[in-house]
Image (cartoon, rainbow, N blue to C red; front, side, top):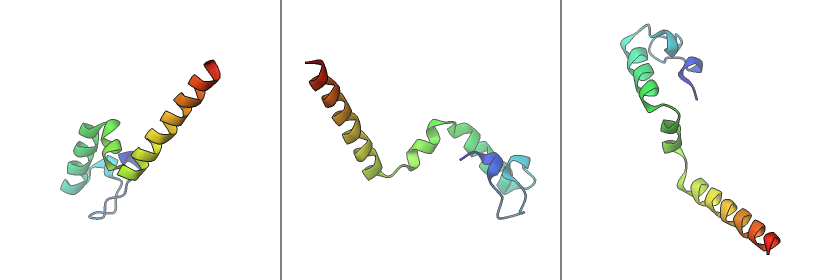
Amino acid sequence: MTYDRLVCANCAAPVSEGRCPVCRANRERLQQEGFFGSLNGLNPMALIALLAVLIAAVALLAHQAA
């Protein structure tokens, strides 16, 4: 999620505007994390399922190529 859609619970303003210290701190944290920072919040089971799907797709392609 991008910070331009978030609303601060402290001041009820968009976080992207940075009206209060809480907004500014969260805006800085989200900017530092960048795109891959959101991947840290993924469930480990979701990662395992994704890996299983990728392995199955590679096995299917290998079977069709043979």
